[in-house]
Image (cartoon, rainbow, N blue to C red; front, side, top):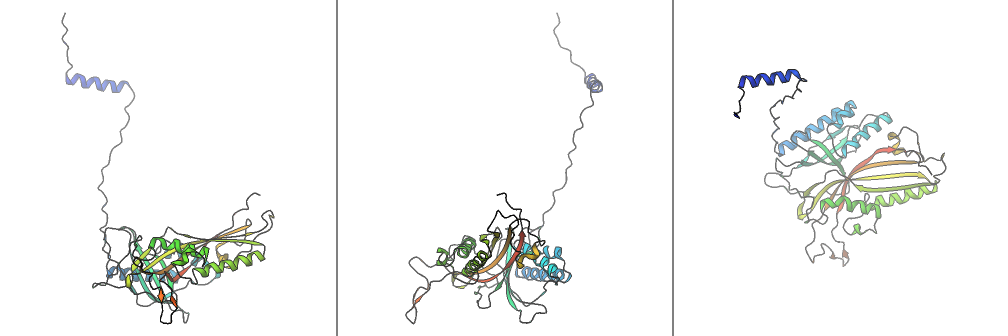
Length: 367
């Protein structure tokens, strides 16, 4: 018996495959893979003094165009981080009051540009510039403005700005032979308060007051212990009107900017939130409602749905952070010329700005 196998010719095999395809269902269509060329990413532009000057002027020009036209959307295109909600609230308040948005006249800026690796983001620089409100006499102030670029595909925006206290002196920021400043890291321990801890220290001092442990490293002032005293007075007035008031400062997720100053210190720019709740004492009285504070009237529609009003602020600051004393050194503490003890160096807030950006009146909670 012959057990040899017979093989099909290539032609017969092809015909059988074709017939099988015709006899059954149509084969499923296979997706076609389209190969496209990878998009080219723009080369990072190194941050130079010239770039900083150009971007500062670009912002000033575009911001003024937006303000002149009352164009909130255009204005928001040139800001980010804490500046975004503040600018939106500013335009909303101007519309609510029926006033034009403020316009500014700027002087010559001092630009503090750190040397950063061109492929490391974000890129940033700080400007210190005199400015005044157009049409308002004696309105000149010094603005500290931090600009940021998050990626090569993005454009520069204003992230933070604070106004120098008229009684404060801006610390000197040394520049190298080419005119560049030195950036600190957020974890730099050569200064008294590591920059990333500055918002938390500040918030603690605002919340706890002069008796706080934070008072050992940060000076009292209008926007530190002053905020604490303001809250205590406001809470007393609220109680007299059968109202309750809470107000809590917290850190924000916004960037922190830090530059080396002379004598080993630092200039730190940062932000805080401050959230307030005003309510009625008698929560079971469904008709009792707190009055709308005038400072947030533009953020509400004129009615209070429940028995509480929630308001949120963005507060922006610049603080001088002195050099950390060496081991065994108490800084400037010691006997002065008149024999009195000198206070050791502490961080000091020298510039601030900000305001309310959100107000809501949630429905009353079920008793």
